Image (cartoon, rainbow, N blue to C red):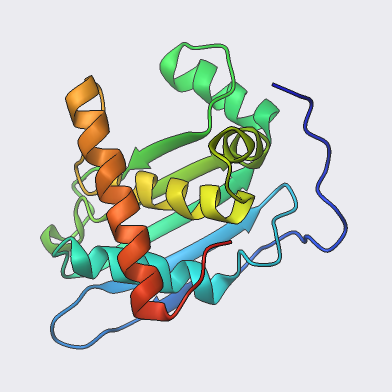
Amino acid sequence: MGVVSRPPCENRLLESDIMLVDPGDDGPILELTLRAEWPLPASISEPRLLSLVAFALREEGASGQWELNLLFTTDARIQAMHRDFMNLDSPTDIMTFPYEADEFSPLEMSNRGGDVVMSVETAALHAEEAGWSLTDELLFLTLHGLLHILGWDDTDPRQRVSMLARQADLLDHWRDYAGEATG
């Protein structure tokens, strides 16, 4: 593994307000908040991520109201979170924090969303190892986090293979649906 430097200047930081998607009677209502603490490829845009997440929620049969917060951050920040929440003092590519029901949440809102934190630095290394773009890796990771929030688990090898295959399937189908190309 090599050292990752800041991406070229055509990349930008991202911070968006909450966006809402109401796909009608047959799909979820989504509130999506995006924030980047590390420059992202220009191809990682708010509308593109919103389209991907809304599509995946529909494909997974989700309904009702959903809230998802995506944070694109640094190795240092995710390492601190990894240490604080999982007692592992190393960076990782992604951490997911599903929301839990509490006494103040209406029943229909409980457990419908979460926070997904991704290290852009680690994602860049993984993208290089996988032979695809950083954009592809970040879209793949976004789906990984969303599947965790939806209840998927990857703690054993069989589950991991199944989850990674579902991510790839969702990404491929979304590209067809959205008229997207890789990269």
